[in-house]
View 1 (cartoon, helix red, strand yellow):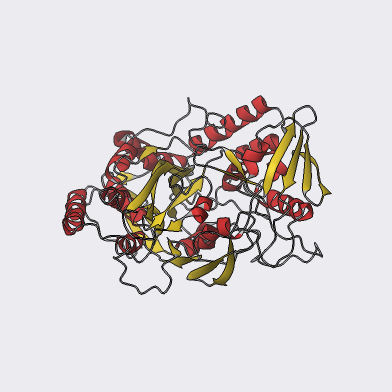
View 2 (cartoon, rainbow, N blue to C red):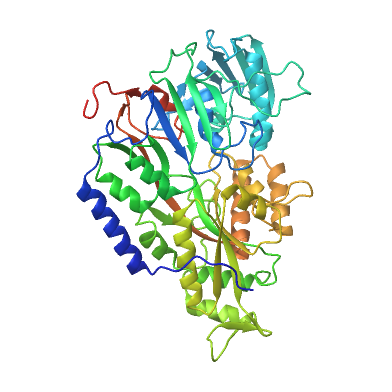
Length: 536
């Protein structure tokens, strides 16, 4: 049944619109960072950060997408953090050692570290945090730990079952150091107390306010605080950025990134490829998508190279499958079906779909081939992608209806459910652990697959074998087999990996290069307000 749709705008019209927008911005000039803020701000030494996803509590175990995660690197400490080059730098642990003969890691914590309530940070707190977050987020890595103990108030020792000199690089950004509860059986629903550079002063669905921690072990941050605002639209965030109403934004659209680059004297920019892929996820329980030939046909009807060039402006790469480009998990000889509309029509014909002579639409048993795809309402890029997919499918006689939905609601709508038809969503491919690929494509009785309703006995058996396997080469072979099976079944059309652009106002000075990944923006704590305005 037809649903409300997003109007189609041809790419020629889109390009004209973007060109006019770019011209209007550039002709008007780029406003100076210290004079372009129409909003009154009592304290200019506050770093403002817009987030496109609604905030939620700083919960210990959160599997839902929440904007509040953007504030975590500033409230909590980590054992170590990676710099922009990927090198681990001390944080709460001022140094560490690894004994390859004993498979033993030893971390030495700072003696002057205190939580925001004034209590000292101890090795007991670190052990509690490690155990809790590893069990929740990286259970495959936790299974490789023989023992974990607080040797003293400031010394943590972790013994592994086998040699792993990369252990710390695999876990550093997952482990937030939290105060261990007195009664481990009574865990609080949310944690607000950390030992990081800022204290949490206020949190709501639309705003998070942080205040500089005067007792921070690195010294009080140069800025007085941070304000995170929930702004549910990429375009609005960029407009606020250009108007001086916010100072930092992550993942602005490719078109806006190009325009912002023309104002490089006023903004820091950082481009990077994140370990994610965008996909068109099908509900394999829906009668339309239960036939693998149909799912393959839809993938082959999509010109993914065209998407990368026209929608992403070349800022990305075509996705080959669910494992990403990492050779540790991805077989370079395995790839998704190629763009081939004629072959797509042949597969659809084999599945019983025939073209109606009058309408040229595909019909089976008197029913039109039509379906609805849900897209995040905050992402203008995904909405453009949906419109492009509609054009691709229209070329082979399929009608696509597009409906927007807030990201958290959409996530809850399709995860583990069989009521939806298709969604445009994003997933992380494995980089340091293969546990997330299991969470995506495996299904158990108590934990539904994150990727909707998908389930397959062959894949389940492969994951079971993977859980029992410790040999790296055998693990790789099993992951290759899992990847091949997922691509064979095509529960999703794997579209692209995007290169994103993060931006920050130059009204602040940074002592080093600007970046928001891999340390999730932790380095922004060292920003300082320019005393004499733009250009200094």
